[in-house]
Amino acid sequence: MINTLVDWFASAQAWLFQAVVQPLMFHAGFSEYLEDAFDGTEWFLIGVCELIVLFLILRPLEAVIPVHAFTDRRARWTDFIYTVLYRLGAFSLLVFFLVDPLMAKVTEVLHLQGLNPFNLENLLPGFTDQPLITFLMYLLVLDLCEYWYHRAQHNVGWLWGLHSLHHSQQNMNLWSDDRNHLLDGLIHDVVLALVALAIGVEPAQYVLLVSVTRMLQSLQHANVRIHFGRLGDAIVVSPRFHRWHHAIGIGHESKGRGTLGGHNFGVLFAFWDLLFRSAWFGKTFEHTGVRDQLPTASRPARDYGRGFWSQQWLGLKRMVEFARKPSR
Image (cartoon, rainbow, N blue to C red; front, top):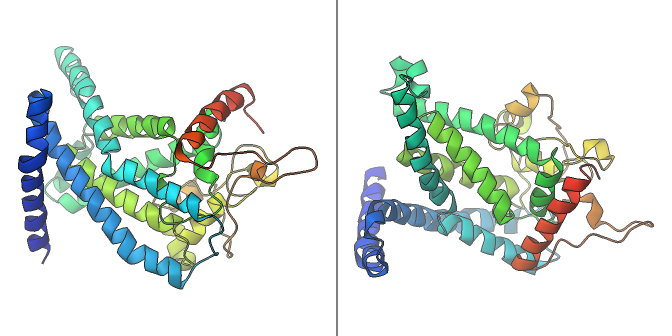
């Protein structure tokens, strides 16, 4: 069954590349990038498959066991636009292949100096012939990197100014994972690509690693009453565990005081939060959003934008504002 699906996918990729992508590349004068374009075609099809799976599985679950009723359906539609942009636009792969030549140049310089680049697989030579082991090893290292980058997004003022767009969704849903400022996404993907290349991840492995990560993150953001039990939530990030990260005044602010900080920064694995003492295991499903979206007697509610472009512009303004005033 799996082999059949792989064969179908390969056939679809070859057809799409030969019938559409390759002629367009020749017409635009970009024939020297055909190899990268072929990889981009694979990424595009993976994104299409992700969208189909998410719609067929998570969308019905949101209808059957929702946490809340949607009060702003336009906000969910805007999240879907972000998802299409990130998943079909080959955003992560584009960054990876832009960074790859730079890393190749660095490797060449190191070789001239008599230094060999680091490769994570060399630390466990007995497991290099076991793809699943090496895949999990890369997944753990990249997820640890994701944890600390995510934590920085909640503790560095200007980064939070960008990342707060992601947290401003008060109707969190299965498309909300990709609700990110484009600059925030670019910085994140450059950092992750640099780490992946530095530890020896091959392009084909990177595509699979990113795809697996994205699918699980879509589940975490879904509007579903799901958790994995006490033990499971301590290992893998569940929708309930992650909802506490998005909870107003608790999940992304220090103890409800309105200052930067928060809890539950794990992207895939919750045990990083246990290890670094940032875990918060609530048993309820809280409302999501950012504290300053709620008006008070001393200030009005902050506007995070309704549409895609207004959200991007206001995110840049917050970045500048919070860079000058890192705590809120």
